[in-house]
Each structure stands twice: as C-alpha cells, then as structure tokens.
Amino acid sequence: MTKQKLLIVDDEAPLREMLSDYLLAHGFDVRAVSDGAGMHTELDRFGPDLVILDVNLVGESGYDLAREIAKRSRAGILMLTAVGDLPHRLEGLAAGADDYMAKPFEPRELLARVRSVIRRLGEEEQTPENRIPFGGCVLDMAGRTMVDPDGADVQLTSMEFDLLCVFARHPRQILSRDQLCRLAHNRDLEPGDRSIDIRITRLRNKFETEPDAPAVLVTVRGEGYVYEPAHDEGRRR
Image 1 (cartoon, one colour):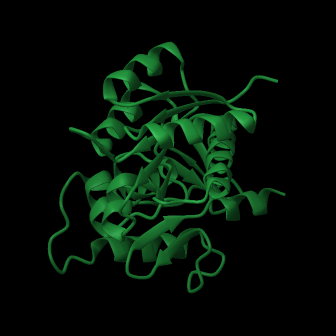
Image 2 (cartoon, rainbow, N blue to C red):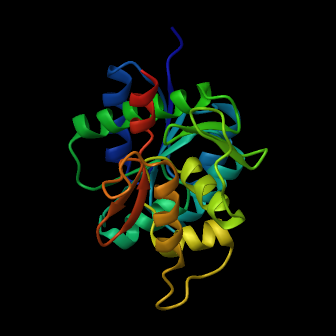
Image 3 (cartoon, rainbow, N blue to C red):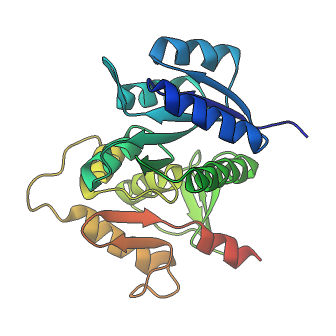
C-alpha cells in the first residue's frame, strides 16, 4: 500500500523534527521544510497529499502560501497557528485550508485531523467531477443544473446556483456571509445586506427534508454557514 505523503512547512526546527518523527512512526511518508522556497520545491518534487502549514513563518504569510498551494496542487492543507480565534480561522479557510489547529496542540489530535482531511479528500476525488450529491439532489456544476431524487429539475436562480457551487467546493468549512458573497457573487457584502440569508432560506425550502431544522446547509451561530455532506452520504446508504 502506498504511503500518504505529508509536507511540513514550519520555521520552528524542534516542532518540525517532532512532527516528522511522530508522523513517520504512524506510517506516513514525511518531508519537512522551513520556508516557502522549500515548500515550492517539494510541491513539485515530492507531490504531497497534505501540507501542514504554519501561518506565521518568518517574513512570509502562511495565508499567501496556502493560496499558492491551492493554485498549484491538489494537496490538502492543514494550517497551524499560535492564534486560534474566529477571524484567523476564517482567513485560513478562505485561503484554501481544509482544517485549522491552534498551537500548542496534542500530537494525537493532529494525527486524527490529518487522517480525517486525507480521507475526506479521497472521498471527494471518487465523486464524478462536476456532479455532486447535494441534499438528496444532484448538482451538475458544469451544466448549471440541479435535479431532485426523481430526476426532475430543481428551479434555481443564477445567484442561488452560484451559492450552491461555493458550498459544494468547500464542504464542512464554516463560511461567513462576507466570504459567501465574495466567492459566489464577486462582491463585498454591504452593511445590513441580508441577501445571503434570504437565498439560503429559499435553497433550504427546495431540498432540505425539514427546512426549519436544516441538516445540509447548517447555520453556525455567530459565524456563518456550513455544508454538511455527511447528511448526503447517509441518504445514499
């Protein structure tokens, strides 16, 4: 069985060594570098399945590096930071991170998160490109259509469809209203603008089994919304 490849990018030598030894001992193929230059080299040469990326590298922004990874590679991204508050988590997720951990952390938790991200990415790769199960329906991102379990078209506005595509590309990630507006509609959300909430309410009425108790597009109080594909997986069993 081929080992999963992990690339650690952190300028703290003791942490790099500890993580390398720990993850090697748990069956991964591991490389570790201290900066963005090393990361770029290993992205091309090593081809990691997952990058464990420190946010606060000396002289470099981990957020910028995460955006570069997302453009150049299919690797997952697990970001590490000394600050774990909501704005930093949201910035990391917006930059393309699949998960986020605050330092200090327990190595066993990091191992669990690494395995979870790799498993999730593997599941997503098995889904036919552009056709994604969504709330019991199937979203065809290339054809810009959605069909219900009986094969009938679900009527969507262009903005509703764009919003669904954003959720489909960011499963299990909490997205703020501002992020959703930028990613779906390429504009900033104006103060007092509730258009995102209105569209999500309409979408829930179109495919949620219980729109008043949504299980697919879930509200995270004070943070935004998250798409939970696990509910779709349950429907297919």
